[in-house]
Length: 261
Length: 310
View 1 (cartoon, rainbow over the protein chains, first blue to last red):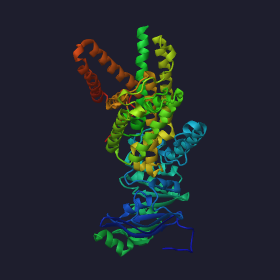
View 2 (cartoon, rainbow over the protein chains, first blue to last red):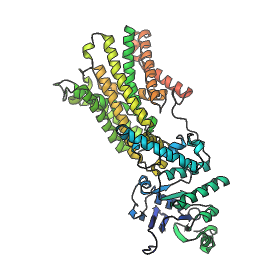
View 3 (cartoon, each protein chain N blue to C red):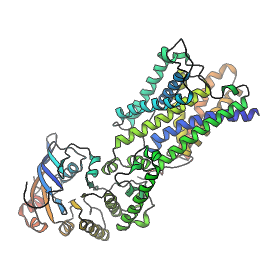
View 4 (cartoon, chains in turn brown, blue):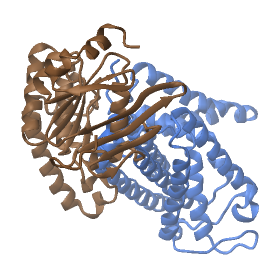
């Protein structure tokens, strides 16, 4: 996997990463790289270890062995809250908006480097806090507009439908201006028309140079969005390739249909 | 005249409680930290300020006769520091474990106050704590009004500072952590760091309240800081409306009125030989009020937190 020659360096590298829970090996010596600007899909049958892989990359689970690098920095042992400062943002399979906070507040929370989030800055440099907050509000409203939620900006997030929550999470991670976004099943439980919006927005964000790593069951969505797909089965990398090539691969068909033990 | 003087006295006491409740509101109402050791942090503040500002006393260490504002400042720092240490040590624990730990801390503080006679005066407490405006003490009305003015000013300042924080980006992070910790972490917020900050700041406010109360009464003893105090403060916050600073102040005044009212009632209508026992009726009255509020208006008089939908 280590290619010293071609192209720019990977945004994210996973090297021989394993995660064991007692006797169970959920992720088994996975290695892959995410190239800048691509949309990389991660698919596989249920129980293949996709979500664990995702949690490892997002930092909410620490690997038993192996290395995870963002750019050139080893972040294998770094706590989850530092990921976003390194340009890696994530969404959740079941969206996690802050239900009692307004949509606007939800998005504002993702802004990085806000002086106002430091306790004493609120008293010592109120001018700076106010200026940053005003700029952040403007940006947040633009993002809410981008995901078609602007008119609900001041409503609490609990009023949103499942699909709208996915869109809110998308706007929220965009606020942090990440280099790479991990999307955990963005199509799950979303009605068809909203799904089109989500696909469209992901593509639009990707066109601005943001890289995506996407777990998804919806094969249609994967083949429409992803440049490259990784297939996982039983915690291991089964194969990788373009969406078309992968869906023809007999090993993939076997893994999905044959129980994949 | 006498009535006005009494009203000033009553409000002063109530506002001291309001200060403590404001501290608890930051910890629980805003951040969701279950502190059952409120009395301990109040006691730390009271004792620190008392030891620093009282005149020299041969019977115990301390009595540094420092100026009063210094005592208050030190009280805040000390209580805040104790809270920070408790926080760092326990905030990884989830709510009920944190509750048990804070309860333990309060018991320890109280026992230290009771037994470290060389420092705290033991069961006899510390007397001759300098009172602001002591020279006015001959005319109770003016004395009480002056005290009220000071306590009201302190309460107002703390209230405004906490309101400012609750509306600040810092306060927003606390709310986010309360609502969904994993999501907040994914957005780069260190749950532990913010919780320790909120817990320490809440503890500092409680410590300040303890100091203010000590200087206003002029005498403190370990029995002032029993779990009953924690119970009262929690009731004040729940009645007023958890999450709302205004609710914290209103709840404090209201619950204190019922406490004092039921005390007066007992004194007036219960035979003298039974009065010590009947004093327990005060706690009953508070308990009944708590039940009524929880039944009729579970989010408090001034609701701030919308009840969660399943």
